Amino acid sequence: MSRTLVWPACLAGILAAALAAAPAAAEKTYDPGASDTEIKIGQTMPYSGPASSYGTIGQAMSAYFDKINAEGGVNGRKITLISYDDAFSTPKTVEQTRKLVESDEVLFVASSLGTAPNVAVQKYLNSRKVPQLFVVSGATRWGDPKSFPWTIGWQPNYQTEGAMLARYALTAHPGARIGILYQNDDSGKDYLRGFEAGLGDATRQIVAETSYEVTDPTVDSQVIALKTSGADVFFLHANPRFSAQAIRRAYELNWHPAMLIASVGASVGSALVPAGPEKAVGAVTAAYLKDPTDKVWADDPGYREWVAFMKQWYPRGNLMDVANVQGYSLAQTIVLVLKQCGDELTRENIMKQAASLRDVELPMLLPGIRLNTSAQDFFPIEDMHLARFDGTTWVLMDKVDGTH
Image (cartoon, rainbow, N blue to C red):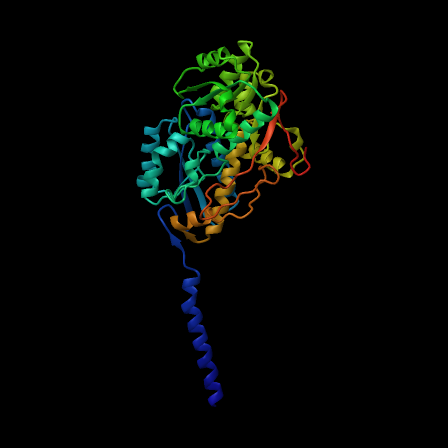
């Protein structure tokens, strides 16, 4: 008799303990912008203005989130991307970012574009403890977790790329006279610092440096000045619009220096084709993404997956523009972070997961390049490969897992 009474008592105790534990296990934690059904994120992009060629990054991201939502979302939640046009104007960036945080109440800001626009809101977002995630800029300030713990970069930093191109110039063109054109903002100055650091004592070979403002109508006068200097190596940092102008103007002036083009202005679709691709033959750049114009990727599963995505979800997008590869890859990174967050969709956990990427391979990163972050390392991508333009595509100059 006593035994029949003991068992129910034990079972009752076990059941009570299980019921007490169940709410904790199933607990969901949300900050503004997250719920059982939605994850709301914000962004500013230059859909108009002098840097509008980059706007396709935001459109590709939005299309990728549409794809994810159609497949059921992330952990059962749909992603809502609120992407405002800031026209690459910092006052507009500030206005739109405040609206995203204070009116739209987004969970975080995702991959807003541009060095100056992001600098303009970095202190504000950090003071509000709103993640400024995977900034679309390679400025070194995005990798400073001590000063800005709520800001994290994504692409390789500009100083590293500048130094890489400078070292190539010294090897391929020893004794060259170097002319430099750069955008007069933090991004251009980062490239310039990196390039000069890569030259070391050979900075004396720089015979001319000139800059442009994004509001300038053309860079014709700057290119004329560089030609006049006698430079025979031309380091060009500009957005696609001004890269196209500079390449075209140099050709028209019958100036044919060895050309080094910063990756941010090296898109075949938005820079070299508008310039006239024959005018850039032999130019060298640094790359970390698979160039969609390079036929070496024709049978690559990642490339085929990207093309299928573009045709179904973003058919207006240019299949020759690497910016669409970048937008696709940024969106994939954000989805990965959201998956890792599970049901703890707080701003603190967003940053924790963004700083906990381990050997992440994305389909359109060059083979061997992986995303890695930690609490001390806010630069997810730190590797690049040199590539040379052959008149049609960027061809990698070194072997990448046997592809070249």
